[in-house]
Image (tube, rainbow over all chains, first blue to last red; front, side, top):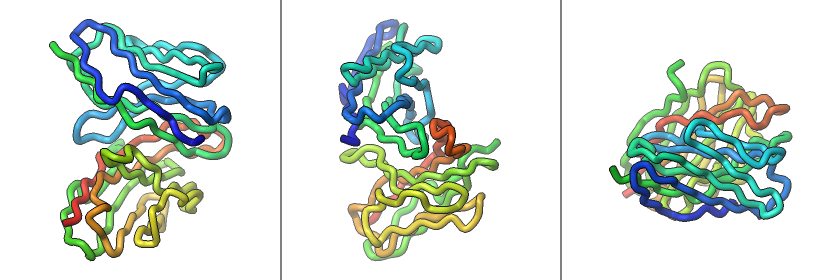
Amino acid sequence: QQQVKQSPQSLIVQKGGISIINCAYENTAFDYFPWYQQFPGKGPALLIAIRPDVSEKKEGRFTISFNKSAKQFSLHIMDSQPGDSATYFCAASISRGAQKLVFGQGTRLTINP
Amino acid sequence: DAGVIQSPRHEVTEMGQEVTLRCKPISGHNSLFWYRQTMMRGLELLIYFNNNVPIDDSGMPEDRFSAKMPNASFSTLKIQPSEPRDSAVYFCASSLGRLAFATDTQYFGPGTRLTVL
């Protein structure tokens, strides 16, 4: 019940296209859902995060869509660029008290020029 | 700020040897996390500290692993004895650690790539 399932494992998108990565969770106590971006040889870095009181959050070309009833959330990257090529991790946590992030398995995104 | 600092960046050792990984969190951050990243298991939380006190070590794989945080600016993760299956990238992360705001962003270090032969 602590798992976060992420798909796909890898994704290739043409420059200018839309990249979509999906995550699903079981624990209804999760109420904070961040996405992290990791470049080769670097640690993950927070990209964007959402709380379940909203269904969508947008920051620049990056959008999180959240479906509370389906217990799913997704990351959309609009106008994907080669510089977006990285591994993306979704995560979930319970915001009160504990600070444990449960990460998905990661998606390796490649944007072809 | 220099960010989270980890050392060494790469470590190659032989099975049975002791390995010590080091981490300096961002100044002013009260929470520190140790993660392990492998292809098979992804990113796993091993242990986290708040105000230098271990809060949750349920992710520590076995007694060969130990972690300490003697002060607010330094933490170690020790593996003794090391085994080939411990080969992974180990990340340290820190956050403001305000327990009333458990969504404080975790800032990751660059990681230590450990290879146990």
